[in-house]
Length: 461
Image (cartoon, rainbow, N blue to C red; front, side, top):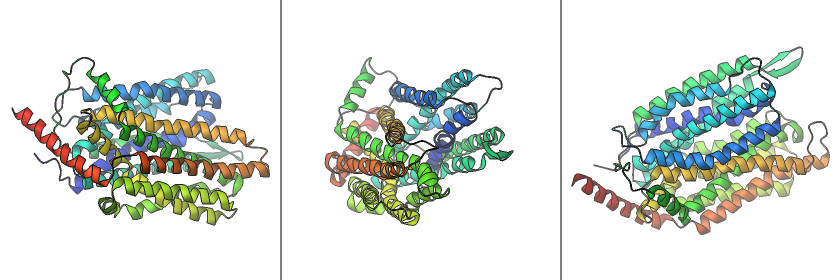
């Protein structure tokens, strides 16, 4: 059985998986916090507590999901692909439940309801994300095809964020001259988006296939899973890549969070935050057509390292030029976006390399367990960025009704310096401490193919 040779339909199907997930996750990142404060009236300090506790729970939940998926009997639809079908409806349902406003509850009651639904969403989302992310390593063993899958996943992720952005722009109404977040528009939009995500999951399930046969693992010896986790955490390429991904995510999320403040206070241009995001994502449209060829020529580690360097350098340049010109700022967002696009397009292919390394070198065959641990460390980037955004706002003395020139300067400096440093540290880690360069990955592919053939022979025997 061939372990490579994916079709365009397979790539598009894989793209739809992340498109569907980002449709619902975009609601969490773009709409949920403001919904909690403006519609449910939950105090900000309680919301921050909820988000932090949820990330702590992820430390337990993510590896548990990975282990559970890895130790289930292999379904005829594939070890990982079947979970797209199983989790789709529960994930759409809990997404809608997060935005249900039960009449008559107190602020405390709404907070308790938010805790239940938000944590439930996180658990079910992991149930979709872990198998989906693990699936790339068993769809093909070919490095170029994995680059293509990573590119298509990034495209799906970008498209998937659009519905939530449109909703946050269109969910307001005006009454007696006061603009407010309209609950009716919110729940209608959320419901439409959640139903739309089901269509995306259906396309993903129908148009993808697992070419690498997974061996049965449900009867593994006691303690084998814990041993696998310990081995994964000893893997230097895994740890370096996970921390690199965390820094990259925290830098991008931090920037995007601060753009709202710059738009309102620094540039006085409401459309700035949207324009800045567009500038940072436009380069992806260009690079998606030839990123695979550049990776084939120079190597994925080498290509992504350059991307992180570009992203960091142009953020730091903005710190030194201290511009008040919105168009100059947007130009440098575009230039930094070139580096961001490079990393985004290939980041998911990097983790498949590490999963293969763990299998071939360390003997860890648990793709979902490896991916779930990576996903948890990467998701810490969200928590890190949230802490840094609030800490930096407090450090510069930000107050919505009292913004001084000193505050504006601190706001500008934080918005470019902190992401710039995060990107440059990530560059150093990937360039000098990540050991899977072009030649190493080529050799790893050869060893992985031999290992697959050996396992197939053992199954046949």
